[in-house]
Image (cartoon, rainbow, N blue to C red; front, side, top):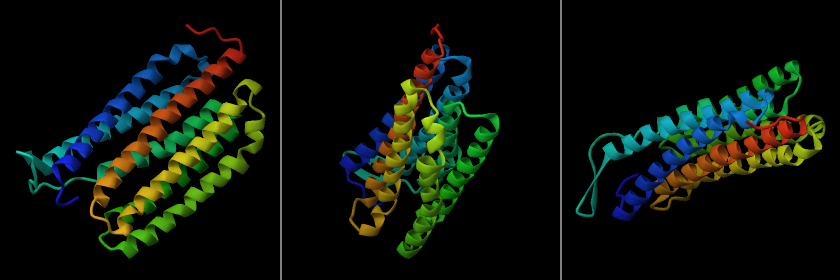
Length: 249
């Protein structure tokens, strides 16, 4: 991001601060509500809180890095010479994106063997997606960004296939009270994750504020994909706990 206007600087600065606060709040919500669900679903809630906790830490680092890279004095924004570290975001995704799928599998309460298999397969595909996307993110060559971005779409499409076809029988076996929410959770994953490629390819359009749009877009997507999804996981866990006769503490 070069030649930031003061308004652009404030927008990015405040969005990073807001996203950190949202992730921290999501963590507290998940962990403080462990007693609201039965023991079978608490691992999913713990992982949900872990996702937002990791994201909160990295957004704090992103915020600090951005604050150190730019200086705003009398309405004029200038670079301090320090690099704005975009790698924090990918380190976060490498940890949290596989965990997002794992929390979905855990809340479905599948057999031990199927849980392990789905977690390994989906988690590995998610990690591969992030690893393939990173070289394009840091590339100064738009052709390189395009090729790596398209490569990252392959594991993403595999994940979509598993969610809608590989898990179909498992979703249909869910309690009637929670079946619709589990199906919605799969849709939320696909819809929110589909926003990331759109943001990823924005710099290829060549408009002046593409860098600002990328940072804001990723932040919005992260809030929806982690905090919003985490609330949905809680709702599933709560519904299934109630269906099994659990009385919330």
